[in-house]
Image (cartoon, rainbow, N blue to C red):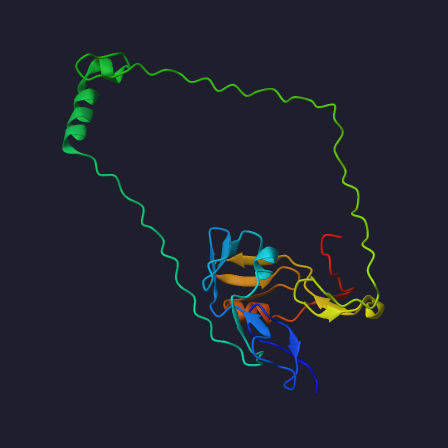
Length: 219
């Protein structure tokens, strides 16, 4: 039987109906929350500022794989209202009295109203310090030695397939080179300029680039 991709959020594994035991799927059963640059799963409260690390947070629920798209619920984030300062009558009266005082208007000390002279503030900008140190150039990370028959999980954005190095080639992987963009409740990929409102629609955007599978995105 042909394998299909699980539609649960946080899983994306391939399975077949004859090989789908209970607890084989780890997933998130509630939608994500995006607020002030923070990404958080509302079901397990796990969060991250980095979107790639956010997608790698393991699911908090277990069950069977499914091809049906789940209906996600997202708790709204309450935005606190800014408090508006209210001037007291005493401060308003004191201000009007200062404005009528000649010494206060000129910025001199006044024993009646407590006005202080206006001091000029000099902002000193430090001169740039020239550094004799050369800019550090990081060397490329060393290649890992991997058995060509060892199963690996591709870490390219939008892929997540299991592959073997012996089957890897320049068009084996379909992925998003990124980056992901979240702005004004819209979610999308800059690489293919597709933007949607719902998170499950976002993770279902088809990849736009072909390339090699990569189990170590830092290499």
